[in-house]
Image (tube, rainbow, N blue to C red; front, top):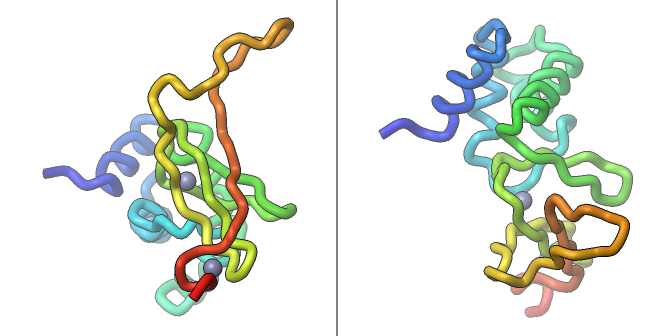
Amino acid sequence: MQGRADRMLADLKSAGLKLTPQRIAIVREIADDVTHPTAQALFERLRSAFPTMSFATVYNTLDALASCGLTSTLKLGGAVRFDPNAEPHHHAVCDGCGTVVDIEPSPGGAITDLSGFRVLREERIYRGLCDRCIS
Ligand SMILES: [Zn+2]
Ligand SMILES: [Zn+2]
């Protein structure tokens, strides 16, 4: 079975991006990361394996993934977070520890008609406390 990382790499390649070892590592790092990391967080994680890698390489690769529709981005408190889940979904954000989790949209729950505005997708952010922060 083909994993998400392999599909992303194949799509990036057909979008004309050269798959360097650094880019491959970045894609593998984000593909299964459900924590919605920032580019900075991914950069810091990969730096030990790729000491010569620049932040721009990380950012530009993530940006290319987002422009190809392979990831989505989430702006939270001024920081852009990257999300390997490109399907429309909502997020729950913990005010205690900053954890962000995906919430599947309930079928039929979306607003589809706003006068003077065409709704393409709906992204809600729920704020509260996660299990760990409650206890
Ligand atoms: Zn929490
Ligand atoms: Zn998400």
